[in-house]
Image (cartoon, rainbow, N blue to C red; front, side, top):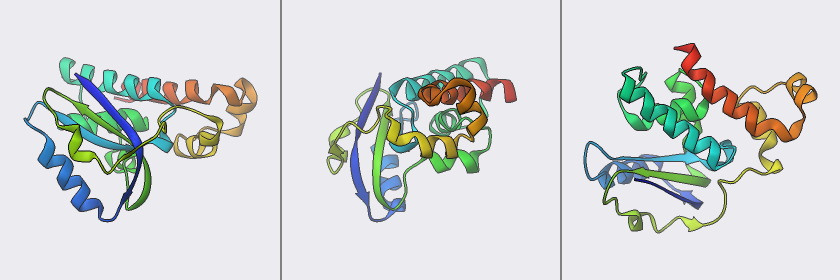
Length: 163
């Protein structure tokens, strides 16, 4: 079961927030991770990354040992864990997509997340997405700015090719 909680949050201490995530995992088979929604090109991007990561574990082609980190690798469109971690949340104000995979995960533990529709793609994310996913102006000229979400999905798909 996959659940996504999206909204805004101010994180005073990232280490404490990440510890809270770890404590709320109810088993080794569950995953909770927090992603920067400003770097996600919509729900399709996130779900595609989750699907690719889960499939990599099923086929034994995973890069990371932890499913949460594997999802981050795919969501960030990279094989480099250091780069993938930059798609996570940080100290300060965050638009967050909190992903929970597993049974009986208590999402009420994260009631400090003010619900807001921050995951969806809109043009205001273009600059951040272009920078984060190294989308060039030449690519934009060739396909148009409205194709940025598809270019991001291409980066996610290419993680398998880079393996």
